[in-house]
Length: 398
Ligand SMILES: Cc1cc2nc3c(=O)[nH]c(=O)nc-3n(C[C@H](O)[C@H](O)[C@H](O)COP(=O)(O)OP(=O)(O)OC[C@H]3O[C@@H](n4cnc5c(N)ncnc54)[C@H](O)[C@@H]3O)c2cc1C
Image (cartoon, rainbow, N blue to C red; front, top):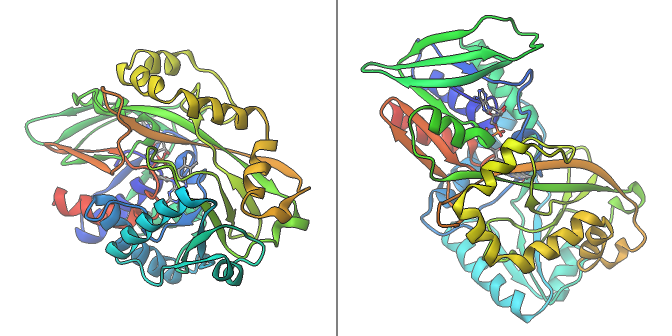
């Protein structure tokens, strides 16, 4: 297994559960688990509202919700079913909301209902809109804690979790795959290089998944384009203004759900994430990394995508430059947030796969090349679906 995010840990655990006696090794380049997407998400257990019926996302999200709920109960991990409303602010959004309601029903999401302004006020008394879709089953969790619990399960069943080792190459052989991983400088986890032979390797490398695909002889297409999303915490005096999660009606042209008000398992309320090109794949403090930028600039799809999205980029840039935009957006759903103080609480960086012709891949993408299985696109709701994605991958590897 390559990658100590929630997917890598879920797949490692599932492999070990389904094949008792198998020797499972999970290799992660950082000194701790959930260092990237899995530790920088909104923490939402998506109920499955938006996704194209029949797609992998739609199927694995619904199964994932069930498995995640059971897992959190089993391991006494927080699972706060606070519910969610998607709010339409005008007639155009209302039309799109009806489409989402149809999808939610087709996906078998329980309890969803469309309501008008009075129905919205019953669920979220401080929220306003012309209509809303209520999803009572949506929940929040701590995905980093879940990732660590999954890795503990792997170790408890005899598996190995090797932190601080970066996988450099994967060499598919006639029987099995040779994995070469080098210790990271200053790693607290030993200095030995790993050059072991495995029967099969599953790569869940998030922001590096295209690089590892290439390192195992796979196609360069799709490439990973990193999009960051900033979060701000809303001050305690205003944090009680919502009961659950408040989401916009997403723009169907993008795979991102739009800035939302998110209740966290610790009771705090955040607003975010926006979506803008990141100048470094792992630039959580806004760093610029030349290699990452050059890769984006050399990807032909990026320029096609950029040419189509100038107005959106300009709008998103305004939010990047001014946190006031976050509050303006939040107040359009919850006017009582007027005067709230926002404190930055970091950013997450999405590993978004983009094709050579500039299309953002919407569905989960899993590619099998002999003994190597590569997860090439696992955007939101990838964390929600993680245990179901693990079942899906392990069934195919077996
Ligand atoms: C801002 C944001 C908000 C999100 N919100 C939600 C949400 O509310 N609900 C939801 O369901 N999903 C959400 N998602 C999506 C979710 O976080 C991802 O789908 C999920 O975390 C993907 O897990 P992963 O294990 O594939 O990736 P990651 O967590 O990124 O893990 C990949 C791991 O691979 C390691 N790695 C990379 N290269 C190597 C190498 N060469 N050798 C060894 N290790 C390597 C990395 O260090 C990393 O730890 C969100 C994502 C973002 C960015």
